[in-house]
Image (cartoon, rainbow, N blue to C red; front, side, top):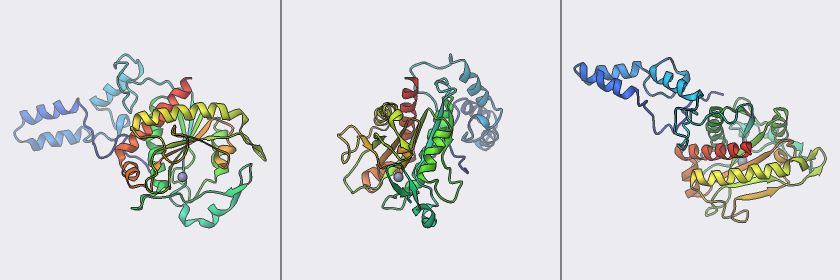
Length: 310
Ligand code: ZN
């Protein structure tokens, strides 16, 4: 909940194309570049605050370019603020489920408690994995979730996160499913990264299998979840340039499982995405890159947009 970071990779701060000439002109008029720099800072500096930062000229430009849809070239890459993308997801609800919780490790008794997943009983939640250098999966999933939320909201969607490090542990997997159900989500994506062996690489999307047991009945969601997962797998590969998993699935990055409570108990279309393998050095180099995580979020967003557009 404390997230207020940039929409882009923080390694690549942006400057508004409109601000730069203003700064340069003032710097040329007034002796010394220092005053020009001060003016730049007064105008907003690095514009990480986006459209909400203030009423500067660049913000007016963004606002006017957003709504009428005539401002951008139709074929160009949508900007993260949606200025050229339109709002194709207006009225749609997407639940983003960041896997695990950064504080789960300090609450082992709570997360080890068993919950009903339809086909049996399973731990409430797990701590998740980490890279060999200690970058936690729970940190990764939250970061990607924030980026994905920003992209989806820019397209008009109503986005809800199942957790935002705003609770000491969990939620449990059954509650994660219920959050999507209660939101009547049009799509739910659970974001993860895997903890497989070195040399095992690539992403995969996990679909709910057919389950009709206990409190679980995935019958209505198997089909639409497959469509969602297929769209996401295709868009994720395109956006990130990474390959589907070389260690699970048939090479297409699609896996079906019936042992995940978060899928079994869902009544709305839902998939898990394992974005890569944190225990493989080459995959870890991607997963720890903010630029790559932005591309991952873009791929997830593109897949969701494709699915919801039908
Ligand atoms: Zn996970």
